[in-house]
Amino acid sequence: MLNVAIIGAGAISAAHIEGYLRFPERCRIVAICDLYPEKAQARADRYGLDAKVVSDWRELGGMQLDLVSVCTPPYTHAETAIHFLSAGSDVLIEKPMAASLEECDRIADAARQAGRLVSVVAQNRFRDPMMKLKSVLDSGLAGRILHAQADSYWWRGHSYYDLWWRGTWEKEGGGPTLNHAVHHIDALLWMRGRPSEVMAFMGNVAHDNAEVEDLSIAMLRYPDGTLGQIASSVVHHGEEQQLVFQGTNARVSAPWKAVASTSRANGFPEPNRELEEKLCRHYESLPSLAHEGHAGQIDDVLSAIEAGVQPLVGAEDGRAALELITAIYKSAATGEAARLPLQPDDPFYTREGVLRHAPRFHKKKSSVENFADIGITTGSPLEPKNGP
Image 1: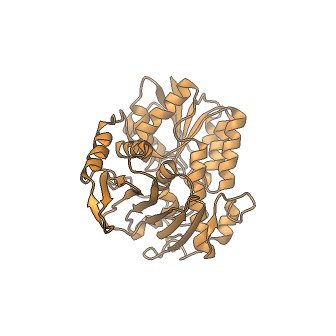
Image 2: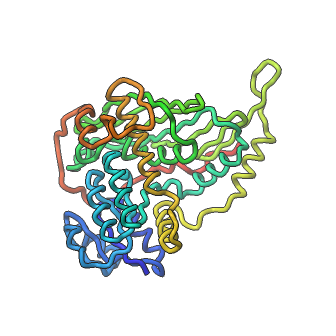
Image 3: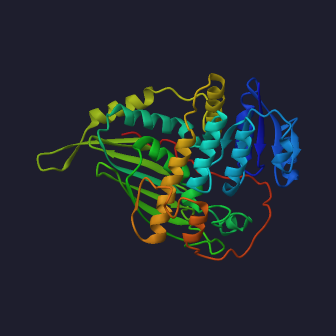
């Protein structure tokens, strides 16, 4: 039985708590920490947890903690994760992994030195449409990938950035490119690999109470010369999200859709129904996950700890996603292409460098300590739309 602590009792902590509660025979939540202890207590009361409630994670020093979920704002991730790793705990870090590549590297170093496990939340990998799309791509049926597209479209009202730590480069670390599109960016890297060059633009077009961007568009060039694109937004009504891969043989995507063409004598397309049906049969034949989302990733982390192996999403994956995001910010800030990999001497490698070079679109005008606990809403980007 693994003892689990939740650090940070904000909205996302509910997903972690509910995930752990799916596996009562394997783990138990013994501590919840939040700067506002009443929030932590409210979480414990809501879920009927017999957990120690503290306002400072340093107060947990005397407890045996096997696994710690870090659910605090990004600028605190490195210090918190490194502390618990050094104390002998495995750590699950809510996205993004940290506020800079330098901090990611320090977390990874701490895990290696302590011989502990680090996983970074990428819950969209643990959804049937994503797992199945990855398998379809790995099958090679779609052919060589020529173009990859990630649309991370969300909508957030003006008051979203009133929360005291949001909307600042210092505390939140960025806008939707970092805090929303990170899931699509992780999936894109998982399925397509790292690009070699990024050219990007970003702006703040609807939230004048935030320093950070609320919209960015990035163009990617891969080492083989093929291209990709990423759009990150909190200004899109409907929150329609997708990952699309155009191969030499077919187009496949999440939400699932398969379209295949062959060429007529004049070069115009002719539907390839046989391949479309083959792609759909492959997709539908794949087994469904026993657990999805945060619960799916927590199941994976628990299994990794129990078996002494690495989880599906490790520290290197969390770092890779942040590296691509940092490259987008670097290109948008400098007006020049950013080339990957980013090196330790890059001006954007450290948190201080990001703070020094990132543009401030607006001055944060208002700040509230907490929102009422009315939950969060999410889109449904991965449900199938239609077949071939």
